[in-house]
Length: 497
Image 1 (spheres, rainbow, N blue to C red):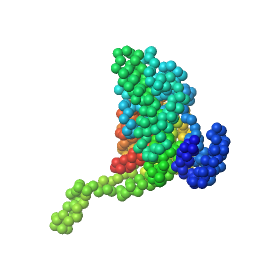
Image 2 (image 1 turned 135 degrees about the horizontal axis):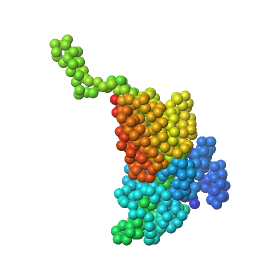
Image 3 (image 1 turned 45 degrees about the vertical axis):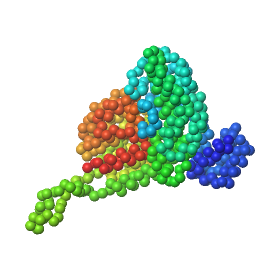
Image 4 (image 1 turned 90 degrees about the horizontal axis):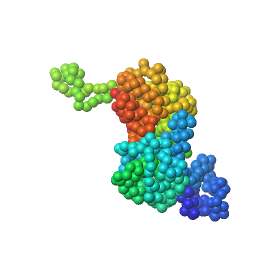
């Protein structure tokens, strides 16, 4: 139990709560008196001993809730049902970063083991297949032989969470120190949960001549990829809780790499500071003269004309120049719940670049599309973003309707100097996609950039229309972190001529 409290104090220090050695000893003495049985009593006791300022008390509350909370895996059936009631497809499960080198075979598949027992598949798994495999359909399946396979197939979320927590304890997840270890610890935890044995079972079942056994192998693969994403997100959250951030730069670097959906609210002010510094750096880089000289391309007529006084001797060379036009940008943002955090920071970044992108018009939608440019011009940026999300996030996500609204409002304003940025996951709730309107936008503008916060291996599953939309986009990028956003915006400013 002393190790538990020691790790909690370490997490507090990472959250910028100053805890001295004397205060640490006071905390140990207090816990010896009150124990761990009454959670609320423990929290009140430690809140008297450890935090001092109001900011530290807020950080302490957040850190305590995260550290001493037993988090179950998501019940995908329940979330899908909630999504149907709200008409927005629910909060879609977002997969981890494809760049994590975990030695994984195949892409992740969202879904869940949170069924009600037996071999009933969660709703998300019913429509999503492992990449490169043909569905074997529904039907009878044998019982898995491995313990991890049984946990995944029977959907015992509480037991699965406990097994993951025990595995994390066995591999000493609290010792994670750098972000690049995320993939390593994800693999270690899954191995400790019994991944190797289950992989051997899947390999044997896949080679079977019996259809039920091959069907079980396919189902285990789907659920294995879902488990990998759950473990990866758990490791990310624990990293933010335990990592020894030895300076402001290290914290900024890790926050730029983490998925924005995994960042807690207490870190939002850090993210805002990073976004503003990022914008200043981009402004300094791209606030240049209107003409940029391309060395190596000689302007022959001008050179001869300016050297006539020297009897044709070429003393003064003149080079061809290209006028750099500041881009006219239309930002169209899906503000439904699944992408709200991404929209928040993308709009903050774009509107911080007014010096180099003065012609920015912003639009928000979940179903009906509305322009919010005036709101950002006359209100504080954070208030404007919050009001935009609050006013436009309701209703069923409908990209087709939003494109129809955009055509009525702005199609005539598009020209060959216009750049359109669309931020959204392309999930249209099986409605009419109206890709022909996107094609018309594509034909009229100079560049159409689509930024999708979901990993690429989920773009064409379920209700996603990305396959149709990508055909009429000049650039399609995965964009779910500040690092992605900075790269996309920097490339935009660099290439718009």
